[in-house]
Amino acid sequence: METPVAGPRLAGWWLRAAAYVLDQTVLLIPLMVLYFVIMVPLFVTLAQDPAFRGPAPTTQLEAQRQSQLMLQRFLPALTGFIAISLLLPTAYFTFFHGWKGQTPGKMAVSIRVVMESGERMTYVRALIRYAVAIGLWWLLWFPGLLDLLWPAWDAKKQALHDKAAGTIVVRDLS
Image (cartoon, rainbow, N blue to C red; front, side, top):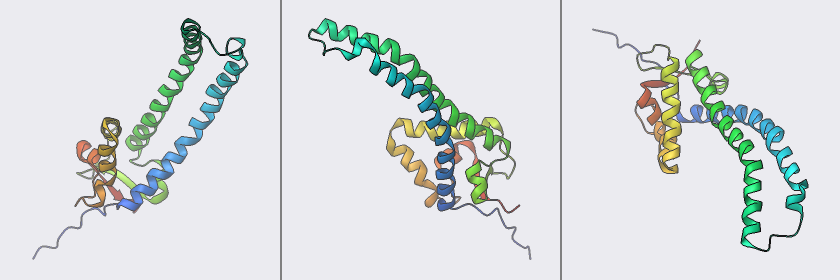
């Protein structure tokens, strides 16, 4: 009689959620610093600019000029902040998942992302996994929420982005 081979201990939804909250907290710190370094000084500068301190524009042409001036001064900083806000989490999750299969949040709760075969995840798979997760949130909130909750009832405890990347999240017993 054959002895059944035990599979990996899959990480449950609560551990995954705790790791996600920890990772978002880690990411929030540099983004808040960046916000206060880039955006707050810009707001202060705009508030002190004589072009914006006078009376409200009285004609549509004056309002248009004032809006264009504000966009010229504000848009580059806002665009840079948004770009960094998108690239930082992408780099964070891709790097940590590709490197060890664990983000700092996953390390804290002792879980790891691996390929369904049990092999270490590659950086390309890590990027695919993150891109699908973010893509589902961008489609609308419902697909992102569905992706977030999917491991709660899936037999392999996989989110939709895990299925797309061919990964599972396991308890790290090492």
